[in-house]
Image 1 (tube, rainbow, N blue to C red):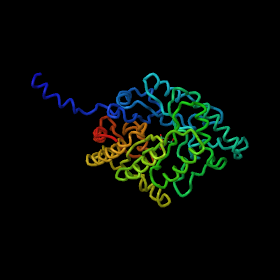
Image 2 (image 1 turned 30 degrees about the horizontal axis):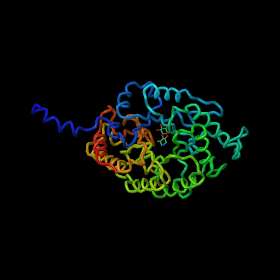
Image 3 (image 1 turned 45 degrees about the vertical axis):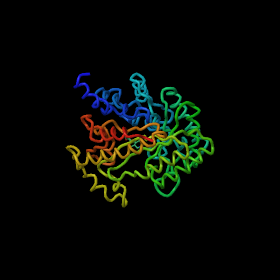
Image 4 (image 1 turned 135 degrees about the horizontal axis):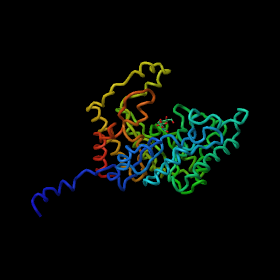
Length: 365
Ligand code: 9MR
C-alpha cells in the first residue's frame, strides 16, 4: 500500500456519517413534519431526501382541513402529499384524526342541525365516519397515525374539557383508537401530546395509558412532541418518561422536535399582560449569534445522547419543519425570526446538526 493511502485510512474509518439517515441506521427512523405543499417545492427536495425517510404533513390531514364542513371531505392536498411520498419513496405519518381541542375541531362536529350538542352515540358515529373515511382512504399507504392529539389537561384536571369530553367523558379516546384499528389493522396507532414528559402531565398520561391497556384498546405508541426551549429542556423528566414508557412496554415516537431560540413561555403568563411587549421581541433577524448556536448544539447533543440510550423503545424521531426558514416558530405566537432546527434558512448544516451526528455515534444502550 502506498504511504499516502495508509495515511488516509484512519480518516475514512472515522469519517462523520453523511446524513441523519445514515447516523440513525438501526436505531430509529428519521422523520420531519413538512409543509403540505412539498410536492410543489422542488427546491426543498434534496435536503429532505438526504436526511429523512418519513414525512408528516404539517396541516392538510387535520380534521379542520379534511372536513371543515359537515360531510364535505377535502382530500386534494392530502392526496397530493401521499402520492408525492409514494413516488419518492417516503413513509407517511398521518396527523391527526382527533384533535381534542375545541379551537382545532370544526364546531359543527359536536352539534346537531339545530345547533344543539349531539349525544354520545351520535357524536361517536360522526367520529367513526371521519376516521373510517380518512384512514380507509390511505390504508396501506400510511403506516402510522396520530390518532388522538393533545387530550391531556395543562392544569389540574385529567383531560382538557372539550365537546368530546362533554358528550363522551374519557371514552372518546378509546373509541378513536378502536375505529382507527378497525379501519387499518396494520397501522401503528399513536397518542400524541406536548409537555407530556413533565411529571404532572406524565402522571395523567400514565392513568390514560393504563386505562386504555386494561380495556385492551389498540394503542401502540406514545408521541412526545418535543417542542423545547433553549436552556429549559427538561432532560431529567424526559429520561424519566422514557423509563416509564419502557416499564409499560410502550413504544415512543418523538413527533415534533425543535428548540425555540426565543422563549415564549411568558406569552401566556399573568393573564396575557406581556403580549404587547413580547410581540416586539425579534433579537436575531440577521442570523443566530455563534455562541447561541453553540449552546443549541450542546443541548441538541444532550437530547440525542438520551434518545440514543433509549433507542430500543424509540421508533422514530421527527423534527417539526425542514429548516429554520419553514419553522412554525417564526409565526407563533408572534412574528419573529427564529432558529430552532438543524438546518438554517440556506439549508446549510448548523453546529447543532454536527453535534447530533456526533452524539449518535456514541454507543447507545
Ligand atoms: O405547524 C402547524 C401550524 O402551521 C398550524 O397553523 C398549527 C395549527 O393547525 O399547527 C401547527 O402544528 C402543530 C401540530 O399540528 C400539533 N402540535 C403542535 C404543532 C405546533 O403548533
